[in-house]
Length: 439
Image 1 (tube, rainbow, N blue to C red):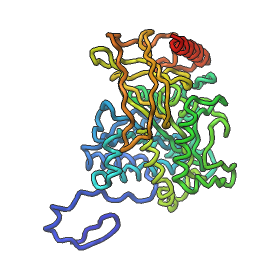
Image 2 (cartoon, one colour):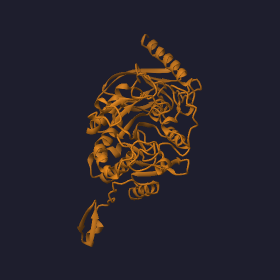
Image 3 (cartoon, rainbow, N blue to C red):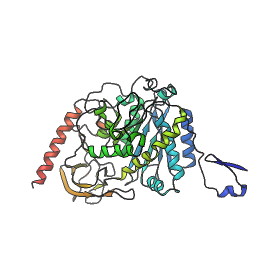
Image 4 (cartoon, rainbow, N blue to C red):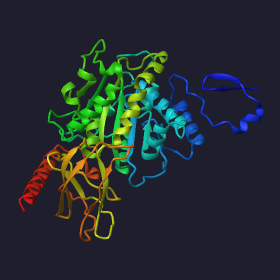
């Protein structure tokens, strides 16, 4: 009989079919509509049930599912010590290249798991969430070869989803859309550490802040991550401009330095979600011909893998009481780089902080009791961040964020006063750290 694997046709005796490794038919380099995308994701989940979990995080305005496929050794739920990563594409429905890059990425991870050592280690040590389309309604009304128009950019209600999130720097009065709310709920449900979202219309990796000229506390990490993605994409890193846009040095830019965005998703993730996110503009044309898709995958393949690996940089661990019980909502700060919203441990008492190698002063606070510790972080090896657990010498209980700190995710809203209250909180915590150093 004739068997076709990955585009190659060969004669295979029937007797060998029982011992051939299982495979997934290679995806075509073409655009897939919402029905086809759903079928592909369900097929992946069916063929790789032990390392995938498929679920919908909500519905679009027109009732289409917002599908997310999780890839990992423990795909069905969070495992202590394994960080949560996510990729999101197609939040502007007419920016379609990222949608297909993410489908190719899923297939690449699944096919190479247990046959490629690097991919096996990445999938084993990371829980990877992939959403190929955040705006399926917009995609369905977009036009192939439409490089510049806004047709399909918005959701069915006419809102730009990348202007629809609560904003810490400016009041956002637009009603939150179903797609936006689904993503906000998703971020609250999972303890995401690192993320990126895909766009089109330029070639650049953009990093927070999007709506403030203030330098973010993790500016060194943000620039490092953006440049790492760009360096592995030669066309992006060259800084060459698209025909209707400026060029970018090393293929990166600060978001606000390019142009300010109110209600953007990357600022929301970083400020309210405790998740570092950058924005990836991967094609000059928003919806190019399908014949270009293989080239875009080749251009981005190394970048998307190497970027995911960076979730294992820095330090991770738990905050525990005297009995070894995890403490939820403990504040984990680093002197000199406190975020607008205090970083809090999850229900397992976990923290995950992406940091470049160096020595840092940590201040961990639980119910007005603090631990101050200098920790030297080395470059991570074998896709495993340095692990350090903070132990309190007494039973402290789990503090609950109060209404005086609206930066906690479940209290984030469209209030222009949020930033003011958070900055006051940040100032008071800084004074506390300085006072402790004088003791």
